[in-house]
Length: 303
Ligand code: CP
Ligand code: NVA
Image 1 (cartoon, rainbow, N blue to C red):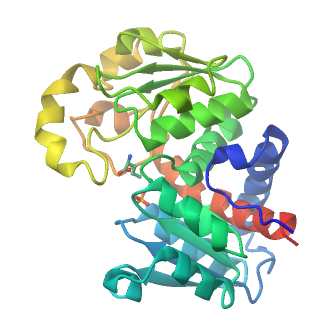
Image 2 (tube, helix red, strand yellow):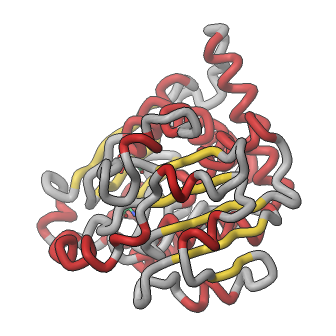
Image 3 (cartoon, rainbow, N blue to C red):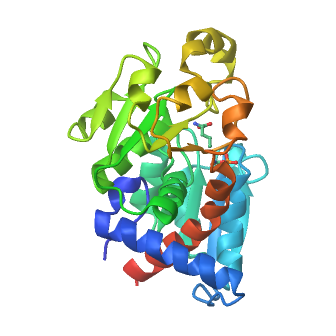
């Protein structure tokens, strides 16, 4: 049997996406009632992380622990990966010891190579190309407050990075319109963009991208791995800040999301991220429930 992994959102269809969101809401309710099931009892998740993380690491470890399983964190700094052992050899070893692998790395191709050898489900915990786990939480945050995605408009302003790519994938699957404004030279990858040409539109200016929008989002101007370019980007991205003036162009009840960590007064003003349209804390908490639902989903479809 071929294993179903979670390399990107394109590994699930719309029905499965909604199934994960609905189960996330159930798990959120059960968690608050202190009635979570032992659905991942005796299962182990290995986390291979080559980059920093707060939310993704904590949500993955906590998600499996609360459902009766456990997690092993493998840093590249202290494991044999840091001394040159390949991800594929590591994956073959872990396949015989644990039940899931989550990996956060630079090159998306490294994740793809791991999936090719792994006999257990692999989860993308962020690569330079995609961040699908974050999108599950973003979509849950919208879905639980506003409902369905059809006929909705979402806006991406800023770097055409891994988060932007995952919004493009979500737009293709869930059917919302996505308007994107990036500085010249920072557009999303053309192949990712072309894959969702029916639902995604590139706009010249941030103001255009947020018109009639139900959800406005952005990300840091320099992602992990781009730090040395941060100073140059600060001037190139200046006009792409989400401030109150930009939010006022969106629909009156539009919400603001940010995957975090944020740089206040760079990509978003404190007034917006700490203001009344911001849902960033709810969004970060939703990482836990969507991760629990994703782990259950991967267990079920690979049984
Ligand atoms: N949003 C997100 O993935 O945060 P971390 O980098 O802290 O995991
Ligand atoms: N685009 C950011 C997301 C961090 C969660 C990065 O890759 O650093």
